[in-house]
Length: 90
Figure (cartoon, rainbow, N blue to C red):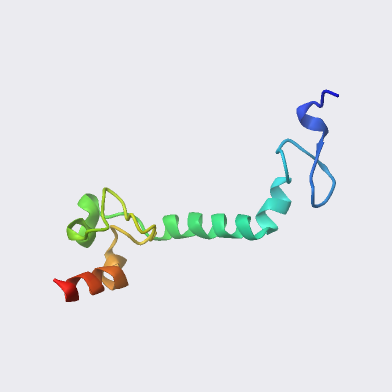
């Protein structure tokens, strides 16, 4: 049976959706959707400093924070616990 894209049903609410599993409203309410929205918020909140800021000397910095901290390369990076632990070891 061939199913067109608009004939898919959301697994949560049962409404038609173009996505393979859930509609966008149900995805936003799911745990994965909440994590994604939080990451987007953090990326908007902390704007990168030119040149990577205080992170450019960190071993976890490769044009971005390889630990995944959204604050990486910003002024908030001075509070980074990984950066503090590394400076103690050096």
